[in-house]
Image (cartoon, rainbow, N blue to C red; front, side):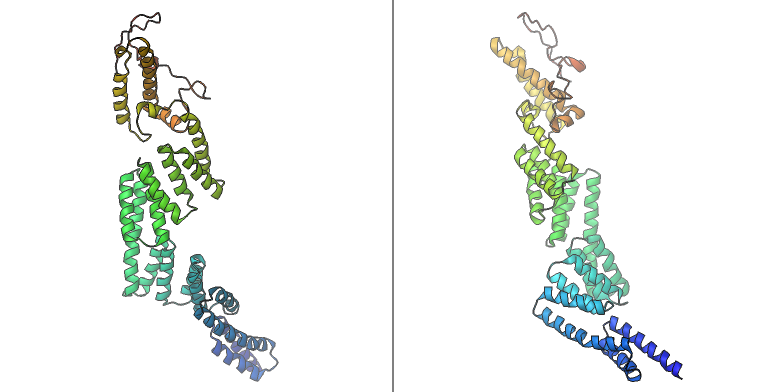
Length: 403
């Protein structure tokens, strides 16, 4: 009989401890009291029984602090409570609400994720958790969580409404990223605008979309539009190093090297190991030096984003204009120099490898450059002075042709 009573006391004590961890304070109180009636000297039961009153007091205090919107103090009290009642989902939901009120969404998500695991039918918890992921800009995670809500209750109206919106946006973001992967930057911008219509308000999501749009406008050769959208993305998140670098690249295309340098430097200050920003700074410094020398884009009068067709069109027009046969005397010498520069510009800007070097701040035809080869207008089958070029002052006979 004594053995049976002892085992029963132990069982009630263990159950009381579990109930306390679950936050079921009144039920735990009953179990501890029952054990102490049979065994007043039971130290574990005495200690747990004594702890119940401070826990109840803290719980009342937490409700008061939340009602007074003193969320920081409420979090401290709830954290203390959770040390005693770690399996109380309600306490975690309360603390998650406080974190959300303070815009600490990461900690709010952590508490809600734990809370949803403590109840098998917590549809409201899954809905709230999905909404927090969405608010944080984590669209795929939001979609995954809201599906859990619909698994529990396929007819849950609020979950279904949220699911439809998140599913649509997730698909739009995926197609936008696919367009980037395929270098289809026009489609990317279109998809980004469609995504902004689906979600025009959530700051983290809007910032992400504008950051991607900024990248696509820049890569698509629309630097002015890219600068505008990149600036919006940076305004929403001043530490978006990708948007900063994209805006810097757009500034380079607009030949605004000072602003490009500022953006690359800002990105480096945020992440000193960001190779793209460090290389961008070096490139900008080279371009500043290059701008003081021969600028092939300016020689042909084309933008840095110009395609080969536009470059060749400008080249033909200027070559015809400055053909030395059109000039006499001292003007002929000026024309010859311009003609050589025009030929050099065409040589560089129609050769992808040479153009890339020039865009990176290195003149591939500059003999003073570390890798410069110098420009030989008679190399590669191109001779701007096709025919008799007499250094002794005789007439030029030009048969001008275009590569």
